[in-house]
Amino acid sequence: MQADKEFVWHPFTPMQQWLEDADDAGRVIAAGEAFELIDARGRRYIDGFSSLWCNLHGHRVEAIDRAVREQLGRIAHSTLLGHASPPSIELAERLVRVAPPGLAKVFYSDSGATAVEIALKMAFQYYRNRGQSERRRFLALRESYHGDTIGSVSVGGIMTFHNLFRPLLFEATFADSPNPYHHPAGQDAGTVVLEQVDRELAGRAGEYCAIVVEPLVQGAAGMLTHPAGFLRGLRELADRHDVLLIADEVATGFCRTGRLFACEHEGVSPDLMCVGKGLTGGYLPVAATLATRRVFDAFCGPVEAGRTFFHGHTFTGNALGCAAACASIDLIFSSGLLEALPAKIERLAAGLAPLRDHPHVGDIRQCGMMVGIELVAEREKPRPFDPARRVGREVCLQARRRGLIIRPLGDVVVLMPAPAMDVGTIDRMLTATVETIHEFFQET
Image (cartoon, rainbow, N blue to C red):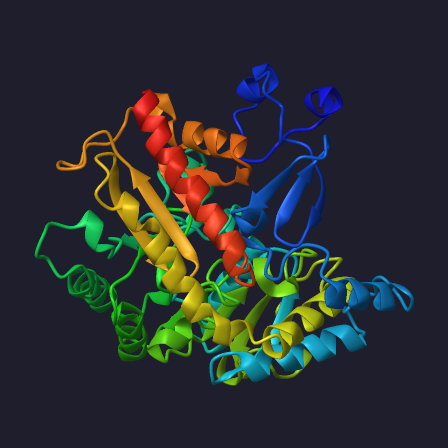
């Protein structure tokens, strides 16, 4: 750990505190097995947040391990610039077959943020290629998170993460989050926000490229869930105002919400869809942006027409990552993972029931296997804790002493187990979470 403190700069981490913290137990993860992480001292912990929301089937999964080993025996990587590779072809075909209807083309990248960045550039150039150069605006939701590259930050609405970089960003318009918890009682949050979006698009007719949304759940905002019909309403508004709908399924995709993709819950087919995280089962950094043929066709034409999409990465369509992703997608269907989800989702809800009346739990938000437990100083108001207390962090540190690794979003404790996690491990995770919260507030 001393070498870590000397050489490594950690993401989303107050480094001064990291360097001064003497409690290093459970920080160096040396191995993993099934749904547990193993630290350098050999202690085991339930992986309660899927190694930052990407692990799908658990750790050291033989089918995925084997696929990566077999591909490594052929070639680890070759460029897709002017060439093709079997794993990238096979993965693209699988993705198009399982994606919402209409998505027909796959553009690879290496992270969720770059998948969103690509979608934004595609939407912008799509209208340019159609001769509508005045379309350059994007509409997103407040408290949204789409990654940390400059374009994805421009459509991100979380001030804690993004405010410092505002001078570097392009201008975007933000509608309110439709999560009912953040609207006055009795107000139809979904309708209110859809009306905002409708007015904005109508007031600037012909200026917008796209609406960008995390379907059903705004993850990094603290699992802010959307009311039923909201996503379908955005699809209808996008069609009415002739703008593209970009669905950021990086966090919600691959079984997290109870379906393969969140868009399926409302029968929505976006114009562009971004996937990452669980795409490879949590093994390797591969992401993708899926596009309709209508969008793709706008980029086709003679070279002199200048319609080429000039974007790419050295490791675009990496062979090892694509092989892992193919094995992961195959395993979703061969293992019966989707069919097993309803019972697990009910188990999560039932296991969290003892917290619903807790005086310091303001809200429990759940969509499928995605859960946010919002901790508050007063439940009735509700009044938040002083951010300086970092209550969410302290609760998660206490959970680690019970053998559970989770990570908070401010004072929202997040549970995001791997969709394939067995019921026994889910029960142990829930017990540790409930007992930790009760114990923490008894002590404080």
